[in-house]
Image (spheres, rainbow, N blue to C red):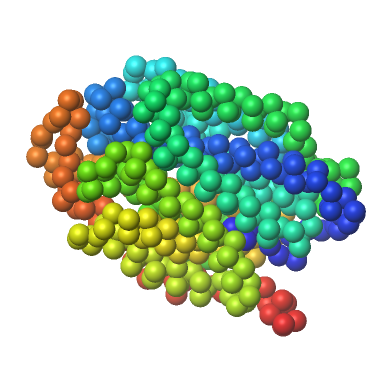
Length: 440
């Protein structure tokens, strides 16, 4: 997400001595930890699929719907949160957001009703909406443009670390304590500590920062809505968002939910072991995000890395899902490579910021992110529906038994999405700043 890595990202230069201090990093790191935390919550169903199907007496399609409730609120609230942060700044929204995540996790953990569990996931998604955008907004308030590339790279790294913690480590806690107890006695206490950090230490702006505290508060609702209209009418923003959504398919559908049960079935391993394999995707993405952004800047192009990333993503995901007799250890390599080449996807956010005025960047990022996450609303339950449709009805201890062939049929939607992302590349403009190219 080299999102706000442009020379026009800031309108006022801060005090160099202030920027060299540790306080900006401390303030940003708390928001970054929230982004990491929401990834743990988002990914948690992937390592408790059997527990959830047994506990709520549901099959794959219903499990996909349960997981998708996180995405419903996440998608719906993207634009309101973007507008709110452009108007009020991130701090107030972050404070309420972390509390929503904790409340939703509590409801999800104690519920014996499928519908209340869905409502809990809905609240988690609503709170998580603020984490990514809030981290980026704080970065634009606290850091000079020259530091933003590094800050955004660390934000992505924090998110991928959280996703990794939501795989094998959470699976281990579930095996040790049970899925409800792991949420109640491990995940929720972490959220309470983070809540204290956000409430007491996170501020919108530094004493001498790059943007005045009133810069967004004086923005009228009418102006914000006009900017939103301009963004929504730009076909280039839609093309970038659709590309980003299709490239996001491996993470949304495979790694976030169906990868652990697929690998467990394919290799006959425990969910802890399967979780360690899917974690490699996040490690690859965490390492790849700043490196791909660096090479994009070095090569002075956004479009070329995005096209190459789409091609390599198709190859990696086809190999993961359909290659036969692949040694188990090689799956670690394939998932790492899939995550690394996925790192071209976040370039859509830097591209969108180049296409829109700085004052509208928050809204532009949130609108683009909404398009990206919309695919998950369809893809996660769709794969579950495909599994149920091809399933032969065999059960084991109240859990449907899906074959490897069932999973491979259902997961065909992933390479299809990646192929379409490559086909729409001609609609995506080159957005690397011309003024920087001319100075080179």
